[in-house]
Image 1 (cartoon, rainbow, N blue to C red):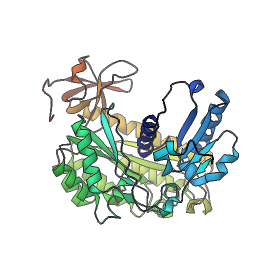
Image 2: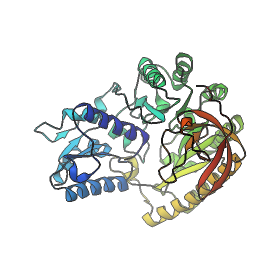
Image 3: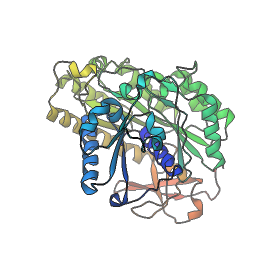
Image 4: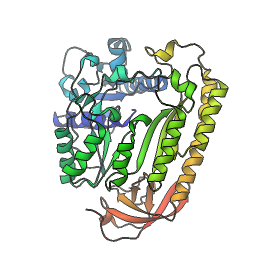
Length: 426
């Protein structure tokens, strides 16, 4: 469940278990263990996790259920009061999960706030087209709505040698693209006297990586120096995800977000002017404590006029232990949902416009190893994060970067034609 870091760690858990003699099975009825790597960013995700575990136990009463991830880290032993949960394992412990499944105890959750070193786990899976490399964990911010720092601990950065070695391992196995993930990658290096720009300079000079993407960044972390470097790079994919959360200064201040709307709107305009149709995604929370109709209208108008490509939005979820949980003037749940629906419509329109602006363009597309599971077509991803279905069935093109003409957008899918038989930068 949840973020890209959780997805990465889920694959690490699977690899760890297989290396220790476990076998992955496709049917719940045939499994000895059901493992859920949970997310706790909202109450809805908490509820979904408990539902999945209860359902697994119902379908197979003999199965051992294992709850790990952020819910496990936050709630610890309390979760064992649920008869459908057999093991509770913390966020650090889950990365060597096999060490705990034969123990007589049931709860293994250390105090994550005491951790000060990055857990140097790596993913050996070579079956995918794009590799993920976790470079950072934890968060030092204390946003009023967010419980994740207490589930992930303080910022911990992977060292440069570990990252460079990881990249070189992937490129030696034929990977063309790597996505750098973490809980707050904009803070990479803070604890070791470096910054994200230092890392990217090393990546570009010390590896043969063809292209890379960055995870979510706070607007204030995208400095002029970083942009100047990225715009000159022929390896960076112009795909930004800005963690905005609101487009109203009053709401941002309540959230403990330390930037102003006019600044990030100007930054969005600058990014759009520097790159050729960069993909600009964002996160927006609706209905944070104290958000009035007027506040929301300010957010709506600012998002409408922004140069964003897509907006991921969700209603504010009150999280125990955060400052937001104790704030007055909590917003009605139905109103939160209504506001989220408004933002989702804005997002749909912006994405549609972004795709249409890309039609007729030639893009470098990394063609995926696997065919689309719904239509059986070859597909790939452009530098600016558009998935394109290709009008050919030449399987020899997989895992190569080709020039593709984006031709058509229908029924929510983009279609294109390969125009270059020559592999690019391989």
